Image (tube, rainbow, N blue to C red; front, side, top):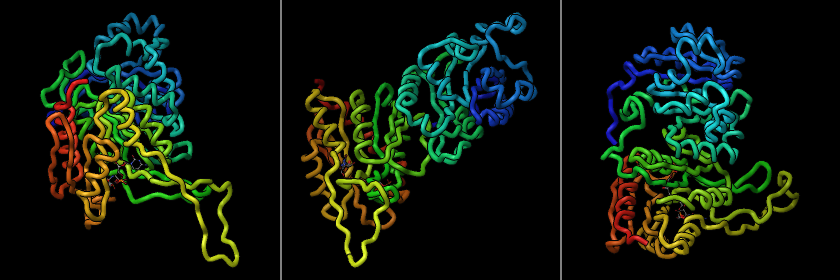
Length: 428
Ligand code: PMT
């Protein structure tokens, strides 16, 4: 998708909502940057947000009185809440806590901010911020998905150190990144969502992608894993989102930020990735298995750290097979009669085409992206990749060689090919 370089924020009316997270202190900088970008800014704070930062700070930075209460006769006499809802071109909530997301997902209007969200037809954007376990919780995942379906654009969260001492996803994106994302977004009508673009061939489609490695524990401190960095899968997620799809990314442990607009579920083991895939693939159009999933796991995970045994030079571990994620999705697709299109990867060190054709057949895939992971500078961990694409669609069988190139570009070609396969499939 061609990104607009014009600053679409000049003259826009941003209603900045702040809820009760420690990241609220960053909202002061966000208000300042939005003003610098040329926006009119009005701030609404929840009751809890005021425990983290004072309305006076935001008033000084926005140059406007800050609204905190729905039942404030004095404020309502100035600009009533419905008027304020109509005033906004964009409602941006940063930070958005788990509680606020839950209330928004339910369509509640139990304070000024949620009431404004319900009453406004403005473009809606939120930057989640919460503890990593809260972000990973199934309830928050459901709420995030529901909000995305309702037209909310989610920016982040980022991964990293958290104020509570945890490490993981849940940090609010930095104010600079939020403003950059708002500037780069395709232009939208002053009130309402962005119009469908001819440059968004995946609009209306739901794409689910697995990425990164899995970790199979042996004991409380050791695990089996591989060298996947997640770069290929994350590039696919970014490309699919840029082409207009709703994207769910199921990621093993990696150190990468979530691509903009992408819904992310973090997992560790193959079985967790399998469960998340089963849940999300049930209602998707394209499923892409890019993760390097461990084929085997320890039959029994030791409760305590495995100790060396005096006089024994070898340790025997019994490994058992993990479920095959893409094969199970393809099997369910056949049983259900056609959805989703299933795309697998093949990581090979020799006989690329022969092994890829075997996986395409054996796992009943619609398309396979075969990469030679023994080439220096390509495959695992690298920024570049090359691939042989093989597919079967309504027009028969096809193939294409994609030469070495940045993973971001290769990802775009893979998504476009998958869209081609989907379009040519017979309707069931
Ligand atoms: O993450 P990067 O550092 O960017 O590296 C990218 C990559 C090399 C990991 C990626 O391009 C790639 O090749 N991913 C697939 C790796 C892999 O596990 O390949 P495989 O040939 O073992 O598996 C074949 C297919 O079955 C894959 O789609 C895999 O996701 C899937 N699979 C495998 C085992 C299993 N239990 N469940 C699966 O779904």
